[in-house]
Image (cartoon, rainbow, N blue to C red; front, side, top):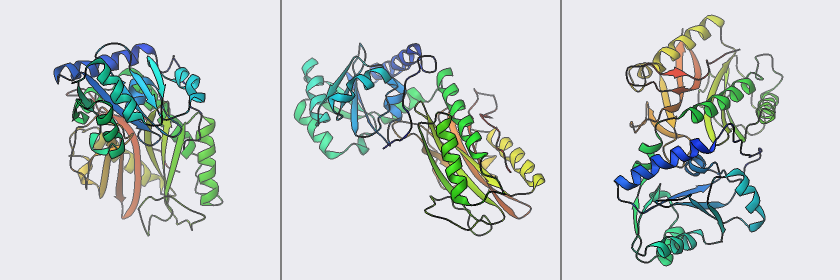
Length: 349
């Protein structure tokens, strides 16, 4: 369950941007000859529905039904008491409340056209119970996976999405600045980072740490206290208005090594979507939103390349003069022939 404030800002997420995204998806649906599209959402897989409507659930689950014309309909397993909140934070034609979202969505689609061709985003990850209920509600519905269709439609970042990602990155950047080499304890620093991010408006923040880079460079969730080495790293995964980014900061490294790391990382990121720059590092990972997961692994030293969206978060391990360092920041892939650029410049302490 999320803990941060979720509220819609028409200035930051205008109706015009949501309408344009919906038209892009509908154009893809028409080309694929789909009569309807279904997008699943819950508190961990909110990215698809939030991109189309602005809705981000605190808990529970829902299905967004996108018809060929008109605004989408949100079928939610939430109780009626949150109806007005959903309507305030979402751009949808109607909010329907039911404990069996698949059954209601299936009935609604079938009522319009019994033998509807329905695309389902992330079909392979939809629960068997919801799939069975879709079939019960619409026995003649033809369900097909529409993940690739949706990923292509949303890969191009619009100015609104870029601005939200930049705001999320700035929040993560300022929050991680609370971690300093003279900090009293790792737990205290993590608490300060979390509090700062939420004060700045983050809907959610997840923190991971590598407490002693000389021993282990793996980032993990910290329970309790952990002894800090001379150099350590923190990673903040931050959500703002449905936009997720990751920022990684190494603390305790020498100034000259930090400058080299930032320059090398920025130069490698500039070559994206080519792997040529990042492949020189000890390990690296590029994540971006393709469908319902906020941050999918789309490229990496141990990840097969997939469709690369314009907005990505990049992480890497560099070894500078024999000293391991972790670095990471969101980036915007340039137009053809243009260099990719970081939304925030990585900083160290």
